[in-house]
Length: 244
Figure 1 (tube, rainbow, N blue to C red):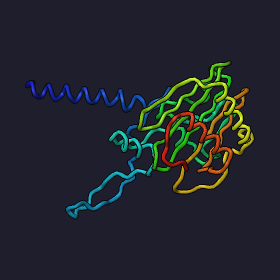
Figure 2: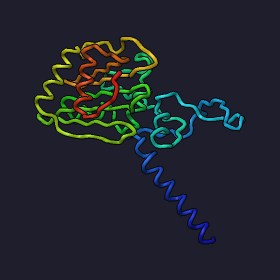
Figure 3: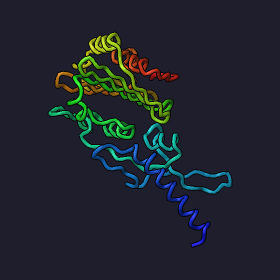
Figure 4: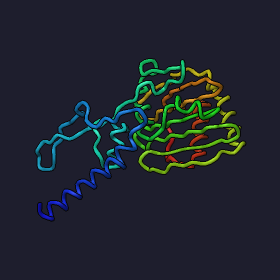
């Protein structure tokens, strides 16, 4: 084998290994398989500058696949959607009753957040807010937990990669509880409000005293629930230009 050929093979091997370590591996979660080549993607015919029609891949704007290509320049045909992601003990929220939770589980797994079922034995309380704008800002995940007097904050934005971790003060935790009470979180219906094409999906999870609850809303601006979500974004230090 000639030296140039061997060198090219070595370069290809290194590139392939880097892709697995830094692209595929972060998209996996414990006990779940990563889909790299399921059913064929949707396509659309477009006309190039030379007038010749060519087939190009089209994603739903704002989808995990769309963001992945936008941020990393990597084409993923489709990510797997974990099953039973929103289930803790006897409390289960399925894709049908919640109007499609699959994409949320998909996103949380891609961003390396585990199901709440893996957290309940570690913390006395935990709350997670997933903010998924249509397309104008990357999805954001915020997780706050308490074990005794230890209160922790974790937040991250897809694409930007600026995961933040810090302790929460007693004053901040008290305000979290106050806003949760104002929003009547534990008695809110799982689904409600309107829907639309431009805005954002808001998904809240909570665990306390062996109870688990999920609330899903479309752009609930002007509600106590939105005030709670905005406060969590404020704690993160992330500065989205627009909040829908």
